[in-house]
Length: 548
Image 1: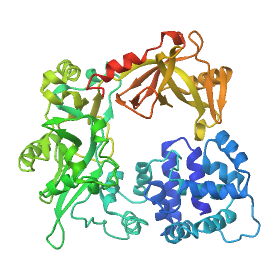
Image 2: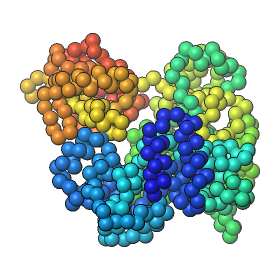
Image 3: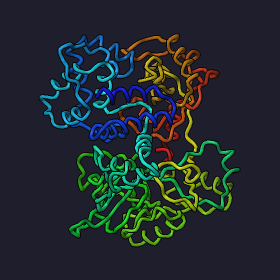
């Protein structure tokens, strides 16, 4: 465990991508199975433990130290795992330092009743760095600046002529501790085979277009196709035949999580052998509904016939990855698209084709993005989130290859809102007030008052964060635990220009509305709070179905 903890510690402080890869590759090269396999599972987010939860950690530290002191320390440090690791009383009687393999087995096998004692014994045996790494495993958030893709790249570096995409291709069929994967990359065994008759395929992702001035000068429109970007969730619908000749059907999220149990209506409609990449939507009376309607079916534990009938799921297909046992990912997108068009004709009523946009120049595509209803989206235009731009010759590869696929989302909605409250961030931001709650003006009993409409913690630079933190400390008028209330008089305070993707009705917010994906797009040092927007402005936006 100490070796794994040291790896996490070094990764957390290493800013360079290639250096992170070398650190992980050296670890995988020097540490034997199955220890390195469990480390890889932790780095890729493949570990979860039924009974080991953050609340267990809070309970344990509450018995070892003063709860009030812990809460104050947690607010200052910004990270629970780091706080507990530093505050845990040193024990001199524990000698055996557990391995990562022992810890994973213990977390999986120990009963809920016995787990607190076992966890405490591990914390007694480990040093500060080891305790921090153990608690990071339990809380489920490493936050060390090393993505799953980077860890797989490090695994590929162990072999000769093995690319990260090769590891991505076999990854969905693997299980920790990945001994067959390491045997393959090191030349000691064959390439692992996925025996699942309906497997997940690591998706191809797009690059966001932010600079609308330069990309059109670099890319030739004749090399690309475009289609609508629908406001749902990206999924894969996969059908196959198992060893017993029985039909198998799966529905996966973009990250590979199987969500079949939540959408039995889609599963029953998968009567094909193939893998469709598309967007999961709710379609009523032939019309695509907003993302807020789709949320009524997401993450539901009980899926009733009434729920299925009220929120009928549908898949709008973007791509065809396999068909009748044939892997199509090495074909050009233009050819896959032709195969998809024929495939969807026989796929059933729960599936349809995402229409392509007819354009010859980037100016024509710009006009289509601005007015989807007049350029082929029809009655579904309000559910369009933007456009997807795909190179006709692009093959389907995992990850986010440069220059192949682009997403050009619609312009966000903008409001001017007043900073009301601030709270310290986590991790590297634990010393700064970086989480901001903001509001707009609304009629009150004694005149206009500010009502909260959202919270954001990104959209500003590190330099701006320093200025914001200084403003919060200088203009605090009240404290509520870790939260500071900031002055927000009509002529004193700070206004944010807030960008967001949409609005919805909310009974949990005093304003009656909730923002979707809010972020701070500009700090209006020049604007007094009295000139910020009013709730009537948001109500007007909310009346537009495209926003709600």
